[in-house]
Length: 286
Length: 286
Image (tube, rainbow over all chains, first blue to last red; front, side):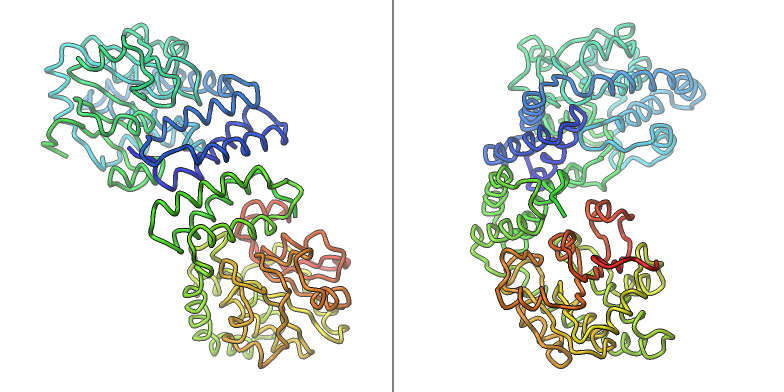
């Protein structure tokens, strides 16, 4: 996805939010805004938003001296999500279509996002998403792709959300490689966050190599790119990965909730929609 | 009022909105964002928001080449407000307290604002504001001040809103000097807008001399400052004038709706509140 004009005020809002999490020092926060303001002219509309997000959040760390402002928030998200795990598992067990319910749960977990949105009621969101109609719902194609794939590449998004991803992985019944960010960025899941969510019990955890808030292929490791380019079925969670990968010609399935009006418009749905969207493959159903 | 950290993303949002009204050329709009981003570092937290708004909206005009992007919107606002004038007059005539009803109508007119807020349903807003409790309502002090003043200085805010101001002026029954901006800025009322609203029939129109979106005293004319400093009762309409004058030690009454969370917090009320707030004078009632 390209960078839209509306992304620019949002870049500044995100920098402000992250700076406030990193420090109480108003002068330092102002320095962050000044520095990010100066960066805007170097952000081309042709770049993807995570490419800029990567530079902006790095700048917040540089100015405030706090490398991982969301560390505590991430740990709390994981703890909260783990407490919900038994009841979410029970929902899957009681459901008529376990894979579909698990996919919905994985999408519900995508509300744990301190980038675009940071005001959410996790349990209310889960309840809503479990019964909400998909705005784009390529579920049968998704199911077929999973059936045919020997292995599934699952690109994670946020800490805490990993627990919800685990529930979907447990229904996939195929070897899964679970991809995390290489370094802390916003509340995105890193190796440690995936382990804390119990992902290592159900999948092989692989770093994408990027330190951006999305799978920015130019910044990914050769190891990840090799797995990515040979993958038969790729699950891409969340907005950041959508922004980075939406123009890719790969067997991608984007699972997300549209929490940002610009991304919703890019996909062609309303804000707040739930999406299970096949990328490179035909949409046979909805 | 000082500039708060939250004002900075809003400066960029406002620049984007104004640039979009001025032009469809995405590259030009991006140039506006780039230029405004570069300006942020020169905006001190100690300045008032209209001081920066003045420079930012000038930059929009400079980059787009459009001096008065809101010209058409202003004319439409005035036309729409004039169409409501007879029914608003009739509300005043039927009311138990004509001055209070007229003051409420003047505040209702303050929703016509393309700076902080640009999504409004004028008739619905009027209906709501006419029955809404004041969050701060120094009405009796206001009434006493009007009774005692030989002349009233009325600092207007937006085009269209002038028509609503006219209704209040018609109930003041004292000579009124109505103050407008010296040059077009956002949808703020200039001399022509006040005349189009019929203000010259009920008051003497005076330019403040400023080309900013608020009465930034440092940029006002000597003529205005002389009237301002000797005024016995000053009505200050809207957010921009509040931001510029809130720390002034003058017999000010701020009439506005808080459409911005930062201003609401500065005043100590909820967003969306209606305010008739005495400045320099004791609050004997609420």
